[in-house]
Image (cartoon, rainbow, N blue to C red; front, side):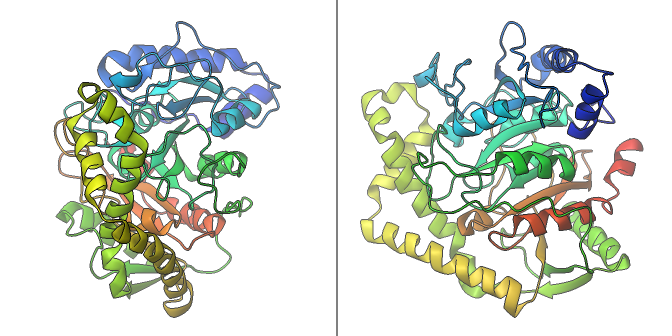
Amino acid sequence: MSLSSPFPTIREIRDAIRGGTRTVEQTVQQAFDAAHRMQPQLQAFIHLPPSPLVNRADPDAPLAGVAVGVKDLIDTADMPTAYGSPAYEGRRPEKDAWVVARLREAGATVLGKTVTTEFAWRQPGATTNPWNRDHTPGGSSSGSAAAVAAGIVPLALGTQTFGSVIRPAAYCGVVGVKPSYGTIARTGVLPLSGSLDHLGVFTTNVADAVHALSILAGTDPDDPHASHSNRQGKDPGNATKRPPRIGVLREQIGGPVDEAQQHVLSQLALRLRADGAEIVNADLPVELADAARHAAVLLAVEAALTHGELIDRSPAMVSASITALVEQGRALPATEYAQAKALQVQMALRFDRWLTETAGLDALLVAPASGEAPRGLDYTGDAAFCTPWTFLGVPAVTLPVGFGPAGLPLGAQLVGASRCDAALLSLAKWVEGRTGWAAEVASR
């Protein structure tokens, strides 16, 4: 599949509309035509309306003319939201999710609903990787990552419970941001695990992600899991004020990585050091090794509470994957769940203190996945390299940094301290300029 390059950014779209060289209608129609043209091969969307539902907002609105892909886990009043499941086929929400309403208020046009794995769990949809149709785009935010990577939309929404923003962004060669837990209100978003679910964004560059998050960040009293204040700061600018201090783990917390993945991380660290960054070898506190195990307990129990009634009522309408997860959750003792909840808070505090005080780091540079996107569409990849950071609720950003032996993208993940999203995004901007990604893409 031919990928568009260079991609139009949100800033370029806004400048063209405000300068009168493009209209909102023209820009949205272009995205709509691209979506339909690529849909037979890419299958990024589960629903596209017959014609674009253009948001004719004020041309000076911050997202005027920006077409957005919205994951089919997130309610839209003018389009079906079926959660990637035949059990909810044709479901039409009564109102938009809080985040969708926020998008529309800012002038954005919801282009269509993007493919998700069923209930954001393991049963994949039909979406293919834009770089190679024989490989997965990752999950569960499959369609959102693919739609941005293919140049259809400059912005798409995803959710992450384990690794469902960071991993598909890395596999598809785009920027993925999972902000701190609670940064974007989840009212109108189907939960998988309320203790772990995050809303995140896909863009082609960090500046667009910063712009989008400055609009989308906020809390809502109707969010059933609202337990944190707004964690998104102001746009911190284009560079850090001092040379950053970045930690590189001696051993990846998710397990071993492919040689190519390790190579791009090592090369990036060398570039950052050459440009003034202090690169420090680091070892995480030993107790954090159990983060993924505790996250699995929270996920299973909370998924059982959310989806158990549906499985009891209509077992033939749901996949074996979600059924097994619910059965696992129902079998876990309450004491184990309570312990995991308590440890989530304790370990999050421990990590923040270790990162900012003990180690004195601005961020960690870690792998977003074990390597390139796996071949085939039945398996969306291993979330182990993202799950600990999701469990801790800390912000994470992945940037495309190179290619593997199969010609598929490889990413690098930056992880920061909780509530320090603005600082992490500022660092990500600085790192982005040193990845060599643009030159890599141009040379292919």
